[in-house]
Length: 161
Image (cartoon, rainbow, N blue to C red; front, top):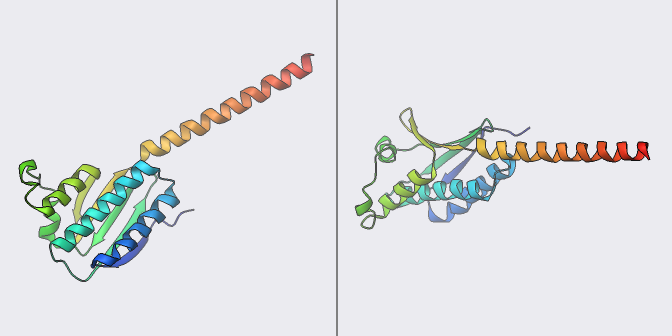
């Protein structure tokens, strides 16, 4: 069984981006998340990290994930409440070219299914992975059905010969 409350503390400096990548690799390996979802999660976390660097946040960022195999929730703490509120506001598409931080916010809003502010210092990203697991379930069920159908047909033919 997967430990669903894993966390990592990342220093807010450019060379720590690799720690984010390792964290996302771990999540996706444990939950059998495919490349598409992996890309969305990695890009969203990378863009948040870059946003925090651009806006001169300092210190460390504690990142935690939890999953019920339908959703993956990734929380970030501490996040300044004003910075967190920016993620729930729409980004003016015309101004994206002018400010790098708006590009980060726009990309995050495009990649994340749910963005919530919890308490005074926690930002939470939610990713819906239920379709992924339903697809895996349906594929496995079809393979089992095919196997047993073929096995029964072969057995019947041998006994009737």
